[in-house]
Length: 190
Image (cartoon, rainbow, N blue to C red):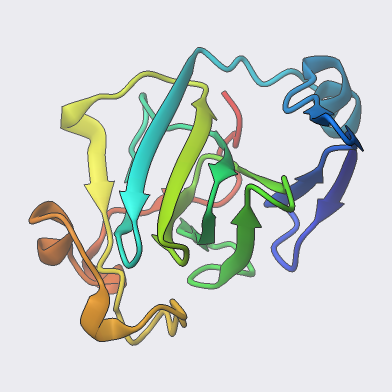
C-alpha cells in the first residue's frame, strides 16, 4: 500500500497492492496501522457507505459542518468515476482549489479526503459501485453542498454535460462564495 500526497497535500491517494492470478485477485482495501503510520495518528472511521449509479450520475459537492464534519476514504468497487475534492478552508493556500482523480474498480486507487473539503464524483462508466468510509455520522442539520458547476471552481467533470444526472438537492446548491466554509488550521481529522 503506497500513500501519495496530491497537489493539495492534505488530500492523499492510496494505491493498495493487488495480488492477482488466473483465479482473480485479492487486495487489502484498508489498513488502519498503515494509514496511522503515514499520517502519524489514527482516523477513527465509524461507518461504511456504498452507492450504485449509472453513467452521468453526479453526486456532490457535499460536506458536513462541525461537529459532524467527516473525513472520507473513497474508492470504486466496479466501474469508474472522476472523484473531486475541493478545499473549503478559508485561509488555506489552496482555498477554492480542487483535486480530481479517476478512481476505478480496475486501478483500485483510493482517495483520503479530510474534513474541510467538499467532495463529489461523476460516473464515467455504464454503471458504478462506489464505497467510502467516514469518521462521523450523517447529520441533516450539518449537511451542506456547493454547486458542482460553479465557474469559480473551474472543475472539468469530463462527462457529457447533457447526460449529467443530479438529485433535486444538488441542482439547488449555493455557489462557492456563498457556501459555509471551514477555517484553515482547524483539526482535519477529529
